[in-house]
Image (cartoon, rainbow, N blue to C red; front, side, top):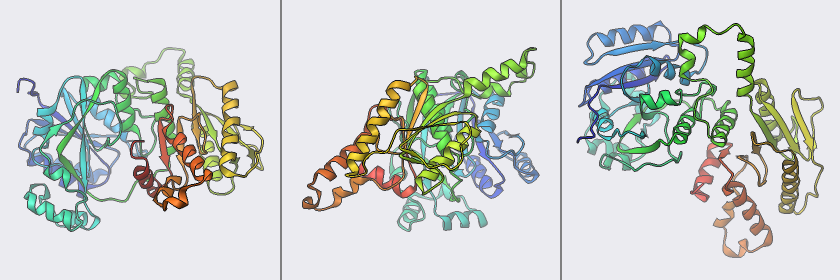
Length: 453
């Protein structure tokens, strides 16, 4: 018990125009067994109804509630979290979402498991759409239901998992792996967040900002510990758009590749001191823009606004260029009818299309040869093919490893052996830092057939 955190804890809850969800969450914190905390509502630009709701709740709440707001300029989760971290004065912070209801012992569990030199990630249980609707329309304290009732809800399909409910509360040892990290349930020492300048606001839209801050903390020597046995109850909602995910994946890969520690755009951007720039402000801004520019190599055999994957890569390149990044494309053939501004396209020549596995090898060798001559340390290699030199691979179809489900006599062929080898190389090579499945179904297949990736 000598290591037990005694100071007041800060809890940052992000929200955006969702009073029904926020009400359920705040009531969950009213019922905590440990009330030595402050609530910081990090509001990503909600209208005046949310401000009025928070003011009313604050009047009879057992702990202080502070409402931190910024203008609605689209999804800016990292920015509003940074603003809350900047204003918070507590030494330890739990960061969660406005649709995640806590069990009564959550704050006490985090207090008991806070340790210097590490941050904590927790889990969450998904509530069904029907149960979430009932909670919003006729609220009740589901977090206070007995275990037997919650287990019945699992059996009925209203809650997705049983194991987190029946585990004892404990924290795993330190690791530097990202797998299983949930941005809706995090806890940090505030000084550690300030050391890496908080969340990186250069991530636009949904995804990867939580993995980014974890990686930057890893680069400082801080480890991740996982809190078991006390998850959050996550209210159902429609999935956020994933339109920015490819660009965010590239930013995360760059963070890992460069072993970056300081956010490109972090908490320091909220300091008023930055308003007084020196006379050569223009030069300062130009240098900042250049330092934020990425050099990204996209690899696809056919490039242009045709087909499915080809158009996907073409649109991705346009988006990356619009964000100020330098883009190269390595392809067999360029199918663009008009030049693509600020994209350097390198045609490597067509290869014989059959056998298909051999065509993959031939194209991969040409890519390898080009990179051997032109590669620079800052390049991020993003492949959409069966290549060998990439940092990121986007999977556009189901894994070939599905053939493992076939009878043995159907799997004995050179074609199958070589395709499995190519896929294994694409996924598991030492330099690969990220796999991006193009759909939930592909993601589930990859987890099934390649659980260690």
